[in-house]
Image (cartoon, rainbow, N blue to C red):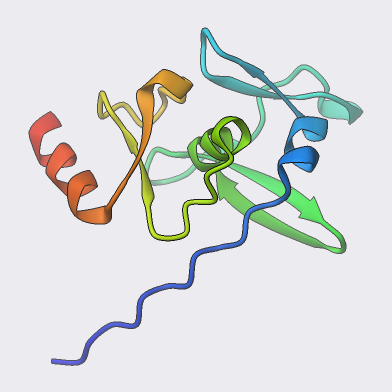
Length: 116
């Protein structure tokens, strides 16, 4: 059996850029656009796995990121190089900072099993 190569962690946009683009509501966990035609609207869409995804243009390239990763990074500064973000309550749409924690992949899988 071949070993799968571990995916290289995606470099996140700068925290300054994220704070420039988005407004975050700590009570609801909702990320909204600060400017442009989408000003005031919730950022992103829900993917097939149930996570909210948002596209961010850095330079000439647009990349998509999971909102919970951006929120955690925006307010903790942790670039999550060897960690994943765990939704403590198991609810993928609950992106309140108090519901997010950086853990190893193993711990995240254990929490997923507990929530089910």
